[in-house]
Amino acid sequence: MPVFEYESYVDAPLDDVWEFHSRIVGLTELTPGWMRLTVEATTGPDGESNPEILEEGASVDVSLKPLGVFPRVSWRSVITERGRDGDEAFFVDEMSDGPFKKWRHTHSFEAQDDDRTLMRDRIEYALPLWMLGRAGSPFFRVNAYMMFRHRHKKTRELLED
Image (tube, rainbow, N blue to C red):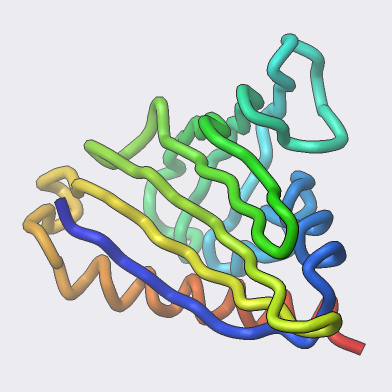
C-alpha cells in the first residue's frame, strides 16, 4: 500500500496545535482555496450535529471541487482513533465514502519543548484508476505534497506568534 508522509515544525505549544486540529476549523482553515471545500455535515460519536471537538467516532462529510473545474466530489471521513499521552497526541481519520479505494490519514503531534511542536501527516492510500491509480502515482504525490505544504504553512501562520 502506498504511503505519503509530510512533517514540519510549528513554533507553538502542543496544547494550541492539538486544540486547533481537534476542531472542524482545523480542516476548513487549512484546506487550500483551490480545493473549493464545503463542509456538508459534522456528526459526533453520539449522533449530535456540529460537535465542538472531533472525538473518536465523529464523522465529517465534505465536498470538494478542485480548481473549480473538476466535478464536485463527496467525501466522508470518520475519526477512528484519537489520543493524547503527555507530549504526544494523534488522531486518525479514515475515508468511509469517497473517491479513493483507501484513505487512512494519521495526524500526529509531538511537543519538542514548551513552544515548539513537530507535526506529522501519514497517509496510507489506494487510488482509483480514474486518478491515475497506480501505486506511487507522481500526479497524486505532487498534489499531496502541495496540499500538505500549504496546510503546514497555514498552521504556522495561524498559530505562531
